[in-house]
Image 1 (tube, rainbow, N blue to C red):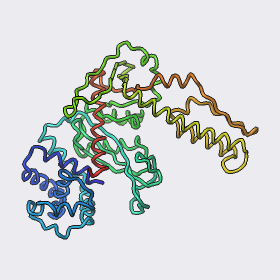
Image 2 (cartoon, rainbow, N blue to C red; image 1 turned 135 degrees about the horizontal axis):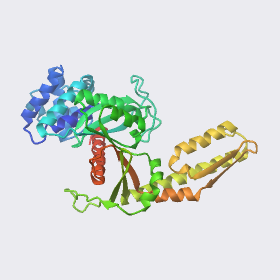
Image 3 (cartoon, rainbow, N blue to C red; image 1 turned 60 degrees about the vertical axis):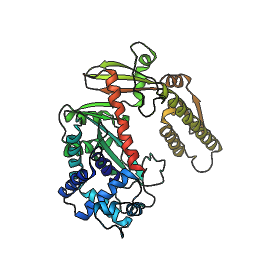
Length: 404
C-alpha cells in the first residue's frame, strides 16, 4: 500500500533528470533513513518498474529479470521473489515519516514547488480475506462497492502541483471527517505548516469542527459545503444575475475534449466567502443519480409496505418497522427527504407519499454546489480553480489502487 505513494513521490525525482544522478539522490534519502543497501536496491528497482512498466509485486520479479536492471544496478535478481518485495515495503513503511519528509523537501528545491495550498482527500482499499493480522482492517463505507470486505482508509495530502507530501492509514470504519486532525499533524511533521497556508477538503470533511481545527493552526480553509446547505441559496442559484462563466483551458493532449460549462458567483456572509457554482455536466449527472436512487427507494418502500400489511413474519414488529424506515432514510438520504413515510403501529399500516414541492426544489439544485472560504483575497473564479485541484489527489489514488 505504501509502495504506490512512495513510488509516486519518488517518480517525481526522475522527471527531466539523469537516471544516475536521480538514483544517487534517492539512495541517499533511503540511506539517511537508516535502510540497508539491499532495501535501497529493491526500492530503486520497484520505482523503475512503476515508471516503465507498472506491475504488481507478484509480477515484478519476472519483469526485473527481463530487463537490463541487474546490469544497471549491478545486483543479482535471479532468486528474487515477490515475498522479498512485500517485506521491503514493510521496511520502507516503518521509515515513512523520514522518507516522505526528505522526498518532499527534495522535490520542493528541485522544482520550486508552491507550499501555500495543501489538498487532502481520503480513499479506501479492501482486503480479500479475514485480514486478522491487521488491526486497522474494519468494515465501513466502501468506495469500492465491497461492503462485505474489511478495508482501511488512506488519507493523502498533495500540494497544488499534485506532488504527494504525506499519507496516513486509518481504520476502515472511521468517518473521513475524523482523520483531518491526524493528517494536519502529519503534514506539520513532513513539511512544516506555516500560518497563512490554505487547506482544501471536500464536503465529507468540511464540518464546523474541522474548520475550527484548521483555524486553530492559523491556516486558511477552502471547502465544499454539504449538499443540504444549498437549500439556503435556492433563490441565488435561480437568479442568473452576477453569475459569470469560468474560462477553462483546452486539454493539450485532446483539443477537442468536451468541457462542461462552469458558472460561479460570490456572496459574503460575515467573515466567510461563499462561492456558488453551476455545472452543466454535473446537472445531468445529479439528475441521473437522483432518479436512480428514487427508483431503488420506491422498490424498497413497496416491499416494506407489503411486509407490514401481511403483519406476520420477520421484520413486522413495530420496532423492526421503525428501524427499517430509518435505514431507508439513511441509505437513500438524497431522495428520502421528499417522501412522507407514515407508520401506524396500532393499525399495522405503512403508507408513503411524495412531497412534490420538495422534489421540485431538489430538481432546481441539480448541477449546483457550494464552496466556502475565510480567504478574502480570492475571486470566485480563483476559489473554484483551487478547489478543483483536489482532482490531483484523486489522480494519485488511481496510481495507488492500480498497477497500471
